[in-house]
Image (cartoon, rainbow, N blue to C red):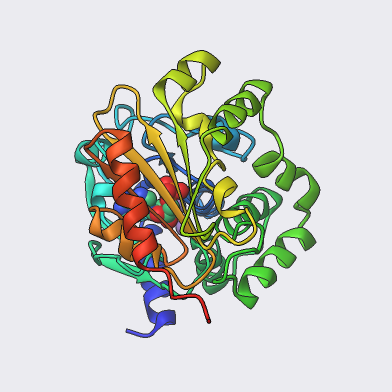
Length: 328
Ligand code: AMP
Ligand code: MN
Ligand code: MN
């Protein structure tokens, strides 16, 4: 099926009069939240009963997004039957326990840009060359001739800017800039949005960053870096794992570092969460995949049911083994 036939089929499905539920992955990020909410706003404007439900907890950093306050965190109040749209998820496991509760889904539309996507939907709009689902949502809206309202523009701008790391990732496309330009033309304020996404940590979050940065370690002559957030640090700052949004960008931002990992002890879960980043040749998706996770070439993650120190050793070894030998 051509892309335009697929996009038309998605609209035909989602506007047939049945309610629509849009959801995204655990540890929701700016792309999952912004792209889902943008679609929800567009469908509502078209007269469809649409709502978002996100795996809890909703990250406080994205509370500013229009519609986030109304998004549900459980399947309890959902309609009896609905079209389900799953956004920014490589597989259904990424919905966490919420996935089991979405029993009213009559069909599933899968909108995603992960290489590893398993095509789990009845309709699968999957484009690994897209920098973000935000880019793909803009194409979907274009296919229906929908203009960008201010609400939609704010959501899409957030999605694209989050997933491209403010246009700093290697997979940033011309389309990513084009979508953001259109969003700004539609009234989205880049200053306000970027401050909300990247520049609004609380004092407690900065304190947690200080503690985490004290654990920074460099390996392979400074080409690999790791950083840690422990349960104790969270207790001492009164924060939750969900308050560490953006921390994974700290070790990779150091000059000379090509691959990095943030390791978090997850309170009440018996696993270590690893967030890997790369700005060179190291394919962190492949490394995360070896630990049962996935993601993109330059940003990937996994959950490992081992103590943090053991996971740190294993991840460092895996990342170092994938470095290209320095030019001599
Ligand atoms: P994070 O480490 O949570 O910042 O995620 C980085 C990227 O990897 C995002 O695109 C996530 O959707 C993806 N990702 C993280 N954890 C997993 C996992 N366990 N399985 C598949 N993809 C993941
Ligand atoms: Mn995501
Ligand atoms: Mn994404």
